[in-house]
Image (cartoon, rainbow, N blue to C red; front, side, top):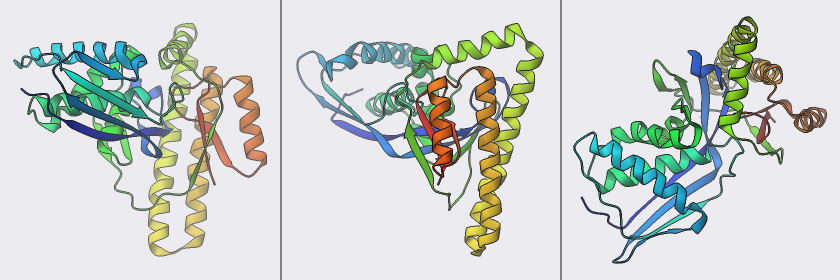
Length: 290
């Protein structure tokens, strides 16, 4: 193996519907984010392993330790790199836009390249790395970051590209609130323990929301291709219906703080259609239809 000069850039991500329920057999619809990016650059040297910014040093050492164990299970020895690793990211941390998934994918890509291993292993290794952040990664975030195109994701089938050429315009608004994915998952699990019937109903509602946004996205793509304004408007309403349903599920899960609820109401009053929190919940970014 050889730690050569290397650089890669990966996108952030956002989820249209399906979060949390995906861990229990549901489907999720995810997109690479059109604006936010993470870039990883490595320059080999003779000294120690240095990370820029320094605050990322503990996380990178943890990820490389996990990668070393993952490689060892496949009979590939790994030595710690020597040189400088620079991480430049515009993805806000704790905002539901895949900051940990982006770092995991970029690191996995770098490690596999240094060991001349097949890129097809990228998502498997990246998911193992992301477990360091969330405890239990569904794999959906690393999948869309790795693939870089809209996907439908289930735990059983993995990622399937949507093959959509035209997407409606979405608007993203930062709520200013930050939350831990691990804590949001724990909150949903706590509800399941308190009231299993209600939890099952909410999972069913989220699955229905995913079906609605998928049907709307496909109808929108077809309508744009046919240049049908009426069909396009109907498709937009189907997408909005699914987004509203997903937001209602988040409210029942207790993942919409009061400050975020007020912002959602204000955005809708200003003309943003079906705004909802995207990501794990309790804040982060809000997505809506223009």
